[in-house]
Image 1 (cartoon, rainbow, N blue to C red):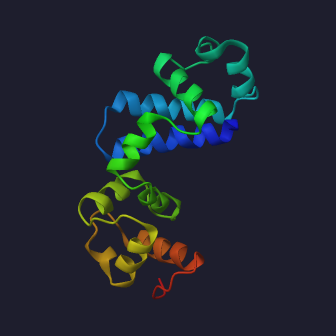
Image 2: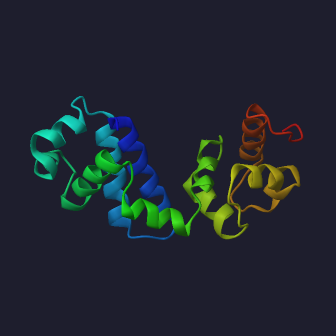
Length: 159
């Protein structure tokens, strides 16, 4: 598993934890670790092979728990925490973050209040006029969301 792949999963863990109203300190730790790994020039696989979790803990922001998760990711491609989080919240809901105008706070509203679970659910919601009922969304943001969905091939009325 490459550094970008590890960083992606750690970021997804943070996003899933946030959607599930997890501990803010842990969420920040996973996000920071993902950001640090994204810019890391040294291979995590090489570091782990050279010294295991102890070697990984030498990296800034990598403590015992995250170093063990990285080892799991390198060895198996997943971690128990990631699987547990995915069992509670469908990971497909995170695809909405790739839509222009949708950030984590909007995603939380869409997930919690409107039970949106996937990009397809969201496209149907938007096509049916659902954006009008989402708090905190201005006209420009609604137009940006519609345009972003259209770019992805969804049929949405013009913004």
